[in-house]
Image (cartoon, rainbow, N blue to C red):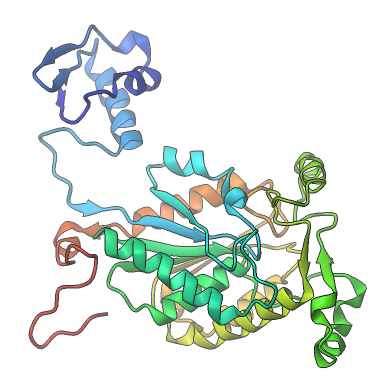
Length: 345
């Protein structure tokens, strides 16, 4: 069996393939020829290697391209929220990027944030990805990041955008762990005092897993950086802009016809599952998959169901693999090639 493109990858190969399976590899030019002790060993080990590295035997064809997964983090947070998903997604062969957004990501939030500015900056980030490659993408996010993804998708009807992934989508602040005073926030809005108040992260920190809660308690002692569940506190003014973004996202759902995966915990303490069902009811049912997680709270990327989250994301991305003929119909900058009498999606 000969595999092209393995130069410099022998270390990774030996980590994946049991020693009993391999004989001494031989080199021929820029190819590495690997010997196996049995056909069964070859089938199992080589398939595992090909899946992990995204490679294929030189005799095989690649009829489709798996989309790249782009995710926005939660409100005023950071890509740390996806830290526990990185390796499971890579093992599943998913190309994954967590997108920071200027003016939305922790440490870049201005004193007077506007949700429209978040959407503008997020569109620029997605445009940069689409313009630099012709590979298809699945766009999504966690919490308010899911609302940001919906807003971007409604503006960017691009042929390269093939699906949406919504993780704990924050369609409404109505969960069971919100502070008692939150119901009076509209008074602060009316008096224009929202910039004087903050919402502090508190137990259970979006986590059902007690060990993870303890880790977050330690992380939150450093208020200069975001924890795995977000910053220690967020201005009420920023929360108000998040609410406005959620309202906008709900208003554009009916016009989005992309395949959509939504993952939400039954016991989410920030946004009730009923609110998610109600919002998603405006989408076409044939394009929507709603998966309910049974052993997590809001931060499903770090809680007990995080492996299921990674598995569901990988399966969804894999199901949207784009045929090579369609992928080649995109120009070098990722935009669809226009033909007479045809229009972009």
